[in-house]
Amino acid sequence: MTGESVQAPFEASAGDPKHAARATRSAGRKMRSLLLDAASPLFRERGLSGTAIADIAATADAFPSQITYYFHTKEALFVECACRELLYLARATEQAALKARTPRDYTHALAQTVTASDSVAFFAEALTLTRRRQDLAPLVERTIERLHGEGARAYASQVARHGWRSLRAPDESSRRFWAVAIGIMLEGYAMGRSSEALCAEMLRVLGEQAKSTGDATRLRLVDDAASNSNEEG
Image (cartoon, rainbow, N blue to C red; front, side, top):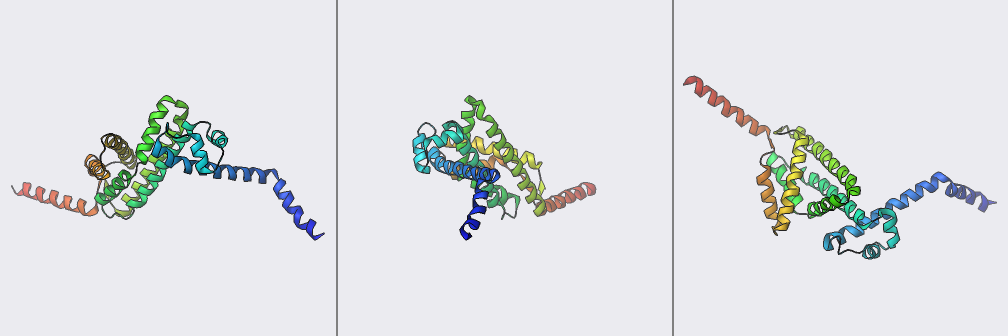
């Protein structure tokens, strides 16, 4: 009697359609994550053509059929890996810049973190791939919009937190930053430039993004002094 009373609720729960659906979705998300984790370093090291589905499956301790089940094609898996890595980089970039106390330090932290990784170059390969595979373009589009949206919110938060005066709207600043990053990383990788050189070039092209409260005060003092001088003359 005791054995039956304990086992019955378990069987009822396991057989419940909602429970089964939740378990299936959870297992599916876990397997997708495992496959992405396994594929990303292989794609980054060997490229799309140099990475076989069998190698990804072996690394993930999965079956090749599971890759085609969840992603349909190797190209789709490549693009999803690149998009995920870019968003991971964006999150790391924002975290690295949290300690910045001046607009200059903030921009430097962003540029330094971005250029220390190959995630932007990886994503650029995905962009090139979607030119021939327009069915994969929606994922790239969603990634870019999320990238800009989260970047704009992070930048606006820093500006408000420190009382900086931004020279551009947050959305414009975010889009400009990532456009510059992608362009400079593509050019730099093609020419074999170091991460330090890429960072320096990003800072040069980006220029000043905002002014701190101290900068604004100094500007007002200079303007007032110039105005007084003109009146006296």
